[in-house]
Image 1: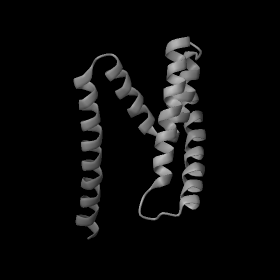
Image 2: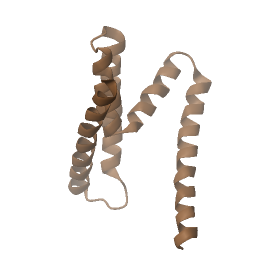
Image 3: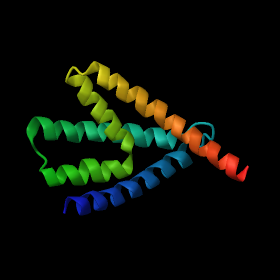
Image 4: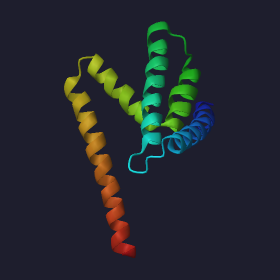
Length: 126
């Protein structure tokens, strides 16, 4: 059941990301900077902060609602929100080194993987 909740939420989140990112891109019309992605990532981080805070502080979300909203909808909307929330939780809990490691590893390895994937394609199809 939780897999289905995550999948349905992801479907809705992906649609929301597509619509919001596209609307921002058309509104701003700045081809040199990805404002649509920026707005999606920041708004996703705000949403997961609000929902996660409600879940943690007030217990307002059932485990199923957490899966649907936090993993599904926001995961489909932007996984950057999960990265932000998990890093925040580590820092809040006094786990400074793991929080910093998460930032460095996620960004460093993520960007390196994009570069490596692109390099492989350029080698194969030059």
